[in-house]
Image (cartoon, rainbow, N blue to C red; front, side, top):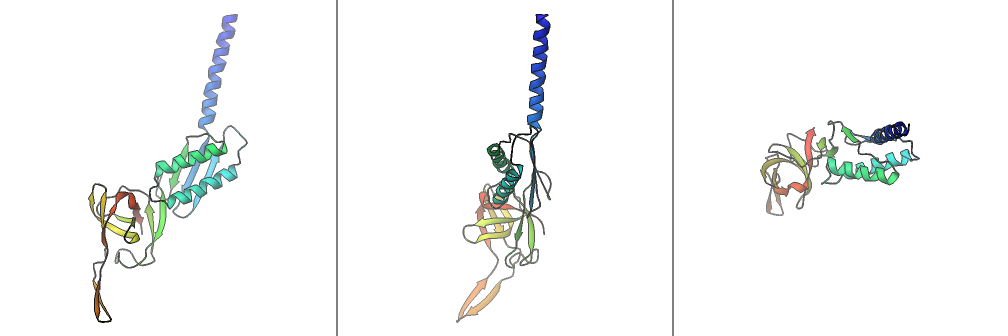
Length: 203
């Protein structure tokens, strides 16, 4: 009889562990990003006393801030969301990022400023950028240049961590001001790969 009781206790204990793991794993966070808007939903399978509205707002605000940081990627975004969840009492590794560009992508909308990418891109045109620093020759990227500020240019060369960017507009404008002749042409500059915000996907 004692052996049966011990066996029954062990079975119940093991079942309790599996049920607990199942419930914990069912905690989840779903984030959707379309480039401008963010929607978040959280699932608390244990029914803990969590302010889900405040948690969802905190995740949305953090995601929005992260979209504007040059070095944010999908891993740092999920890690930050996980930290917020723990702060609010939701313990989960099930963080799902979906977007208008597909799963595990961070789309951001940028606006073109100027005519240096004509005819491909027009002044004031909105473009959808995928936040990534994985770039290839021929990509159009948004970068933060120490010399020019935020720029949208085409990748001309990739040399390890150094990226050479050029304008699509090859026209050279000559103007004379007070007897001095000025030549204006598109930008040609090198940036570090860490200065890349992302790759233009739709325009």
